[in-house]
Every structure is written in structure tokens, then in C-alpha cells.
Image 1 (cartoon, helix red, strand yellow):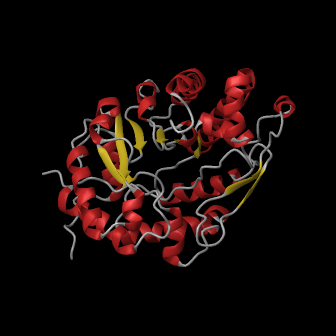
Image 2: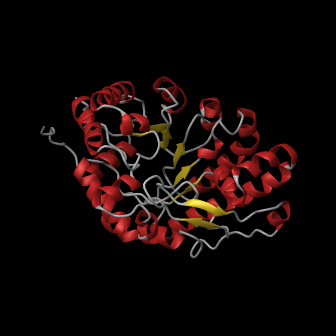
Length: 355
């Protein structure tokens, strides 16, 4: 099947969307590193260890399947390595991102000894910076991706420990969140100083704040103030847009997420757990909505069921007040059938045009 010819380039489409101008069709946002590795024959670990190969694999896959935006670098366990712990790169058929091995904080006493990482040298950051230089050279959005404040804190000491301390040692939780927040601000400042505030779009992934783990009251007490602080400081640098990936079941947290400044517009990436009406209720007036195609349907569903899901989602969200980009609700499973990935773009071709 031939696709209807685009009326705008990818860059023109994204630039117009972020400036509140009309666009030709719904963009297809990429959350696809593991799939890209398999698509070009690389081990998935290469996507996190080699900036050049990671960028190349993503660029080629996006060209093949018609994704917009540009290549991205980051992973959910960010913070462990950067604060002095260890991680391991993904291996085999079932691992799709780096994973924790040892946490920087093993005991209460370890918290007092923690120091802020050197953002030029710590962990994955030299690779991330090399990747962003490739983004700059290719004139794609420059992202600096890290965990959200609570997720980084949970990657410093383990989420289980953090949850126990919320009940018994809340001062330790606040100490870790203070370090995570200061680190996020330091990190974004380094990217802004390198590339300019108008080029940098930070991405914060916050899976550990999901309601499987936190109650909304705990979110309000422990997470919201730090999210607001880091966002306000980042926007004060001149950054125009922040992307928050609000991962997993966070419906009970959404009234608080709506109080987090994300720019004009912000970028709210949502999982399949959040329905379209709820997404528009909380984020439609302030953010471009990104999401939220169920990864299980992409991986295991028939092409027909996936096509139906995509076209229905597009119909519900394409006229969101600040715009919409279609994307999987979390990372596209690396083993997704290639034809299903094509079907997502076909759904945009059939249902995503603005006429």
C-alpha cells in the first residue's frame, strides 16, 4: 500500500506542533530503542553503550517505518550508575534495557555519604552527551533523558527500601529526593549550556511513582513538590518544553501531575491505563498528549486489532487542544512483529490527517 504524501517534513511538523500552528497529520512519536536494534541486527545493549550505532539504528528504523521526532537515548534505571552503583547491559532475548546490579545506597548510613554526580563524567552521561551531539548535527530535537525525581531516588536505594522509608524514615526519603532534584537541574543546565535552551527538550520518565507503588497522598507529599521545583528551575533556564513520561497506572495521581509546569506547551506521555477523555481533562489545555497504544496489543495482537485500536485512539485524541502524537504507551516491545509497527503508521495514514 502506498502512503498519502506528507505535506510537511518531519522537522516542519514537529516545529509547527510545538508552536501551536496547524500540521498536516498526527505525528508518530518514537519510543523504540530495542526494536531498532533488532531491526538492523545489533544487540540491544549497543543502543545504550554506543552512541553512534544507537543513533544510526534509530534513524534507519524511523525512516523505514515513518516515525517523526528523532532518535532518543535513555533508560528507566537511570541514577544507579550515575550515583555510584552498578548496572548491567541487557542480554538475551528478554532483556530490553540496562538493569540494576548494586544500588549506591545499601543502608541508612549510606545516605549521608552520597554526593552529587559530575554530570560530565558520571555513568552513562558521556554516552548521552555524544548522542546529543549527533542529534544536534542531524537537526533533530536534543533530548536529555533521565528518571523523574522519585524514580531516580528509587534507583539510588531500591524502590522497596524507599517505600519502607516513606513510612518509617521520611527524612531519608526527602534527603534522596533532594539529591535527585538537584541532579536533574544540574544535568539539564549542562545540556542547556552546551546546546542552548531553545534546542533542549528534557525528558523525565517517572514509572516508580505509579499507583502500584504509591498512594496519591504519598505522591502529593513526596513527589509533587520536587517535580514542581525541578520543572520551575528548568523552565527558568529558558527551556520551552519538558516531556514527562507518566508511566503505568497513575490515574489517581493525575490531579497532581496537572499542577506540574511542563512548558508551553508541555509534553505529557501517558500509558494505556489512562483513557483519552481523562488525558484531555488533565493535560489537553496545557500539553501535547503523547501515547497511549497498548504495547501488549502491538506485541501480541492481530494487525486488525492493532489497527482498530490505533484508529480509535487517533479519533479520540487528534483534536486535543494542544495537539497529539501517537506512540506506544511505554517502550515498544523489541520483539514486536514488524508488520504491526507498519500498521501503526498505516493507521495514521488512514485516520490521522487534518483536512
